[in-house]
Image 1 (cartoon, rainbow, N blue to C red):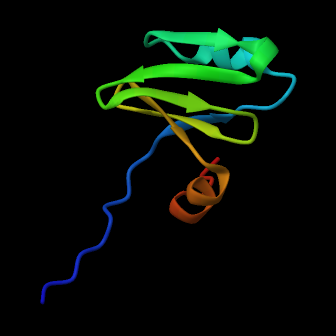
Image 2: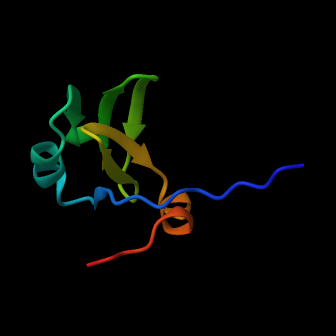
Image 3: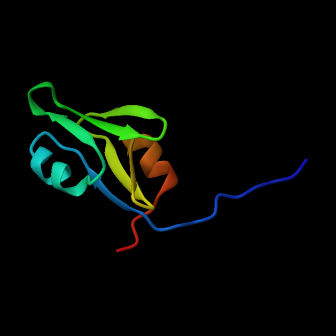
Amino acid sequence: MAKYRRIPFDIEAIQLKEDNFAEVDAFITEPHRVFEEYKVICIDTPYGTKDAVPGDYIVKNQELFFPYKADDFNRDFERVE
């Protein structure tokens, strides 16, 4: 059986919080909808619409944006700056 390792790559990311919806809205350049009153941002991805709620990270990778649960983000990425 072969073994594989995730190839490291740099990403940009921002964590969605209760008070930074406008900042996250400005960060995401792909089609998305902000529903601050419901505490959710809906991001259109190649895999369908994905929801981000406070605590989630929004990851930018090669001009695509994806929400990432905080536990998964902290497991898969380390801060470089």
